[in-house]
Length: 594
Image 1 (cartoon, one colour):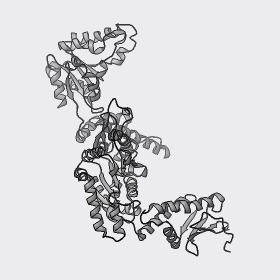
Image 2 (tube, rainbow, N blue to C red):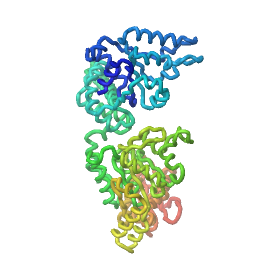
Image 3 (tube, rainbow, N blue to C red):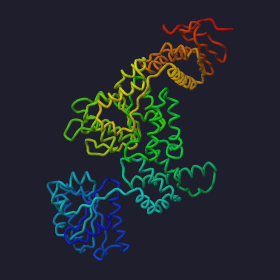
Image 4 (cartoon, helix red, strand yellow):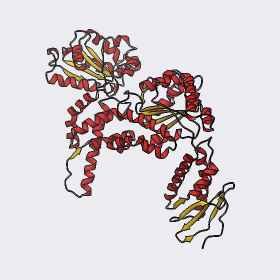
């Protein structure tokens, strides 16, 4: 379609100049290069059969013009030659917005004003290329220049069209890198670029992937030949796994998550989340099922991977589930971005989130949310205490959840389709507390929570969420499981120093008894373990009571009110350390067992 439109415009009598306008990387320059190939192949009308495309390098023409009139002379020479050719020379001006102001030193006319008379007469054919932003910023402001060009929008090609483009240029990259590119690698480049590389357009991002994959395959083959001490390097073959490695470098997502292993992760996502989040079976299952539907491609395309509203008391696992999702889907808890919504209240809340409007303070800084996602498009976004946010901010969330995109203050579109949106709230927590105390059933408490949520949030906001998840209060049996998880984490840290650590069941009971607070959930357990157990172990390490190869056994004291630390070093047993839970760390008791 674009090809026939460009040729038709060039065959016009007067307004025979084309302005190719599109996003960076969609192939505007390639269209001009393709025009020269179409002419050479005889695939154009008779009027253009003997034409040739000549690129005008404005930067080179301006360079060295130290005297007034030198630039005008150079440009008019080009214009005169094009006019004398009888339409057989088609000028191509890449970055055509540079015509505005080019060569206007010392009061001279710029390139745009020099070109206007020639363009108005229709005696020269011209093709220009620029982006939407630059066209609006420069060309549209000069109405006389704009009307001399017919604007042609260059749309981003589809995935299938990109695959066809890659097949067409495959031979160029095979010759350059001296290797062979599998067709499966071309298909993988187009599909993975569309899925994982946001903020850039086809075919540019897919072409870059193929180029990077070729370089990777060739390097791996050379290294393999050197290790095997072979005299000749075999011809490398670019496979889909090389493309996956290129995507991994671009996005930071490990290669393992791009292949078959990702499907296995999704199938077993609920089981892996249960390992970290205790006592919230229903909540974990709801989240895992929603993510599974989205990644299978059965949910509405273009929306975030999942969007959830987590409700419940403090310390019941809302943030922990968000961290677990980040680790399972993006391989790192660092992919979790937390935004405190209590800070987004009143005038300027929306501007702070997505960026200030032009001429306003903070315009150059961008929005906190949009800038984070532009830099890290694969992440879990946690909006904490969302009920405290300004109503105008919630309206922005409606657009985000519905379309999967936001437009920042600078007019840039930010894609959220590779993010998970999680919002937390304590609305209705008093009803869950009453249910935990036995004043009502838990089901009745959940119904009251939902009624309060529906009263606070608009229906159009709630209807766009993947799930509204209510976390149940944690009881003693579940809290003991959390104690085990916390001690398992401590054991792993100590093991990194080549020290073995174990805790008896009685010791776990002491930790639970001293740290347990049903109203505050699991958070006091983590703090207690850090303040007491980790402090004791740290002192042992620094004082040399526990060294590399030691074994530390934690048990309950005889009164069941404290912890007893027994260290067995490679040289023999060390003094036993006892710690009463209502006192600070005490010195080692000098009564080692014989």
